[in-house]
Amino acid sequence: MGYRVVVAGATGNVGREMLNILAEREFPADEIAVVASARSTGNQVEYGETGRMLTIKNIEHFDPTGWDMALFAIGSDATAIHAPRFAAAGCTVIDNSSLYRMDPDVPLIVPEVNPEAIHSYTRKNIIANPNCSTAQMVVALKPLHDAATIKRVVVATYQSVSGAGKAGMDELFEQSRNIFVGDQAEARKFTKQIAFNVIPHIDKFLEDGSTKEEWKMVVETKKILDPKIKVTATCVRVPVFVGHSEAINIEFEHEISAAKAKSILREAPGIMLVDKHEDGGYVTPVECVGEYATFVSRVREDSTVDNGLSLWCVSDNLRKGAALNAVQIAELLGRRYLKKAA
Image 1 (cartoon, rainbow, N blue to C red):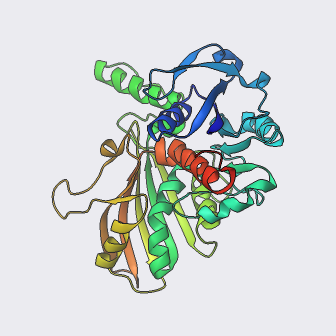
Image 2 (cartoon, helix red, strand yellow):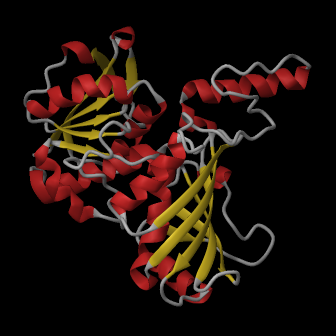
């Protein structure tokens, strides 16, 4: 006997990836419902590449009673309305928005990093999915932290436009096309031209001059991995359609060599180490699209600090940064608590 699963926001980038990954991983679902806003009601989406078409229902009228879990990709405003309603009906919500991430009664989970935190999900019957840039970083940091205890992390991100949704991807395409034919590249979704440019600004500015995206990386890393770790981030939007990259500098309490770090990363769950000191001996965003792994390259010692390392980290932000992590949480929830499937 399998689960009854709801995917909320099935028409968006992340929602479609959730359906793809549920199908790819053969998640034991006896029944899948897809829900979205009223304007999408009646449309159909494919369940992975199975050929099976699912008809979208209006989330406003959907009764979650009797459903086991719901994977939410509908944004914070809609989540604030519907997540408590689903949770109260006994349907565990796995939420991709930022709404509940820092709620002390809601676990923030990356299954390779802190699976034990899921035990507290019953407080609100809601589990939070972390920010896309945080998720891939903590997968890379966890095994190194276990080995040598991380004191401080300095990270610069190179985040793809898919992190801003379909509108971000459309804007990069349209601006690129317009520039090639000599037309104006108008900025609508982003604050400046994104085509052939980089923008050091993601989300709102805070009083201290950082952005909310940078703040998320700081506080989420502390909640998921270790509150003692100091983190500073600079988050940058780049003209890449899918795949986030990060240049990470790490300072440890204890000595750790690049060779030891590579040995640890090579065996760590969720990580693929690709690190050859030659042309092309590293992974770029284009190569990570559609993959489950978080790729690590360019591991090297930092001689400017005691016990320092630098590395390059790349992942498909629609997958590990969102949809894949949500499905992995669903798998963890099923194994540990629901246990309906054979």
